[in-house]
Length: 344
Image 1 (cartoon, rainbow, N blue to C red):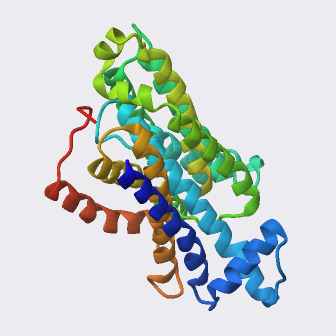
Image 2 (image 1 turned 45 degrees about the vertical axis):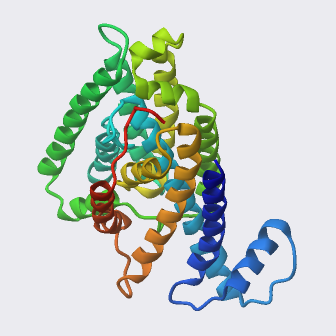
């Protein structure tokens, strides 16, 4: 326990420092003193601002929203990955395993190539992605309950089936429209980006992710039971069916708002849960808080790299995460092994 508490405190300090450092990095040179001075003034009306108006705009309207969105998305994807792996009892599950990525892709394809949802405003592509992701999640839940109560196997099979359907429809729309620019836009959206971050969206997204994370932190006992299986949980007096439905609805909502705000950013929900399990075992009481903080830190620095790695342009963050994360993931799995669903 002391190691866990110490690690948590260290990661929290790293997260706070990362926020300040990430905002200083970019084409405009900004000091950490200026960053924290503006943050304290804007949030708590403490002190005075002596920084130029241009720097204030760069810090508060451009870089700070991206950093806060990175915290929300990284935290959300990590927690959802941990929960999804428990729900389906599969260590290779990630936030998009149940066909949610294909649903979001279909929604974005309909928006970009056919203009569906254009009346929803300037963020209609993200909104359609949200609708697609959430709709498929609900359909997976309904389909897995047909012919008996849902379980982890039925959820996986339902997700795979609906994922194939959505992918087929997306490919068909791309084929019949033959729009090269539209296909390029879809590809970029599917690679993920935090470039569109703004305070209005964050004020809507951050509470959902934060409340969802807090909720799952209270559900560690049930999540631990899910790793043991339905038969064991029933003998212990807990029926997991109702909990699976509740957890899927909440994670679907969280994934939907993440897709809406940042497009498709994969891999975080796979690698972060594995890292925290290697370090702290499979007890969800420990790994959910650690995973949330680690995911936030990871995405903050991935976003910084996406902005600076190629001068004058921004690399889609999903590409960077896969390039950096995959080798690290393979290395971790070669060096260490851990039980999934065994003893904590």
